[in-house]
Image 1 (cartoon, rainbow, N blue to C red):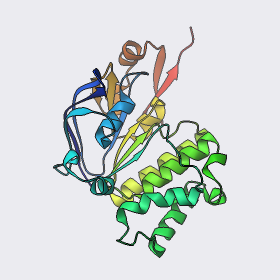
Image 2 (image 1 turned 90 degrees about the vertical axis):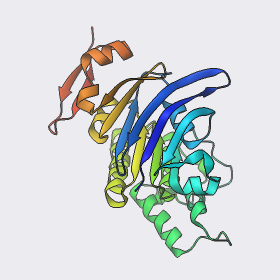
Image 3 (image 1 turned 180 degrees about the vertical axis):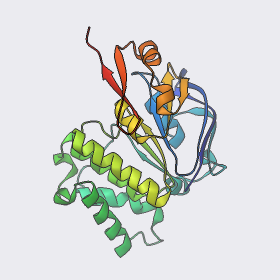
Image 4 (image 1 turned 45 degrees about the vertical axis):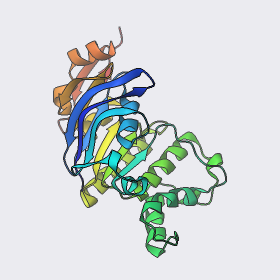
Length: 257
């Protein structure tokens, strides 16, 4: 139940600016999708929000500047699931997901029954129960992706940042994953920011979209406002037709020459 605000946020690597002067606000319980062509700055933006890359400008959660908070307090406010995670060697799926509870543990650092129950529930909802005792190194790409999401969800942070969470997932697991995020958003009021390559999924699940191009905001609004044939042709150099799903959300279909 947290509001995320970006104020003239710029970020990059060394002297190379990747995202320039982005300002937006995601209300508590909202779902913002970040889309754009490869290299437009989507992943860098999420890394800047969580403090993993150099940035200028403001990142505020409920009016509090994240950069002024300690790591433990930031982890209680913001959960992050990277697109390409660095997974530790020697841990099982359950051990790794339990790491998401670390910001909430007491002085002794021991998980309680409530922590174990929460992790067990997440493993079940993400179809990971059968893999609970498996080593991380034995997982497929899609299994790793679901495990990383489970750890982020275990944090129970007010703001959840997901970088391409459906990468490597078949359509069924992708829908189940996004359905779970939507359920948690409804149950807990979690504020969600997601980067997505699949524009149709982005349209179906997010409330608003920000379209980045060369690190700047090219368009912002509802999926119907942003996902137009002219905008996608200009930003992606793509031939597409924008259709309409039964729920009114846009379907972006490629058109062959």
